[in-house]
Image (cartoon, rainbow, N blue to C red):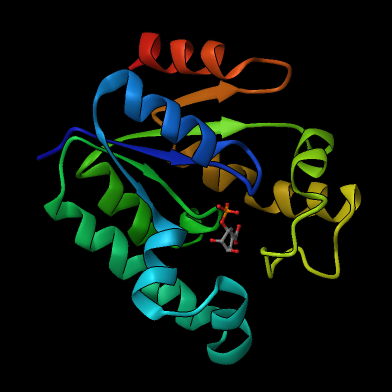
Length: 167
Ligand code: S3P
């Protein structure tokens, strides 16, 4: 099974929204990685980070990527940090195509500013911090991507059409 579509990108890049649209458009299954982890652990992402630590969360994330090798015809909306571990990228590549949704720090900030559900941004909710972290991760997203879509100023329909055309 190698026909999954992995949506990667910074927090707030639109992975969940585009995942839901693509699911309907392509008649595929949808897995939201963070939601699956929350469900399995019975804890919020904030609580997992606070009580167990980021490494524990990253281990759960890596295990889930591996588990997804058993699922096909699935859109996977990944957590924004999934590319931090190269093994995750290698395991995703074995099992489908990786689509990188990019957006500028200003666009990201507008989309995430009212959320308190992202421990990485709690206490750093500003454009400068987002831009700095994005710069640190940029090469990881770009090297992982089979396809890159710039999302700024585009509608959901336009983004989905571009993904389908490029796949
Ligand atoms: C993270 C992104 C989050 C979530 C966790 C860590 C990150 O997912 O996995 O808070 O390190 O970028 P979203 O990209 O869906 O917000």
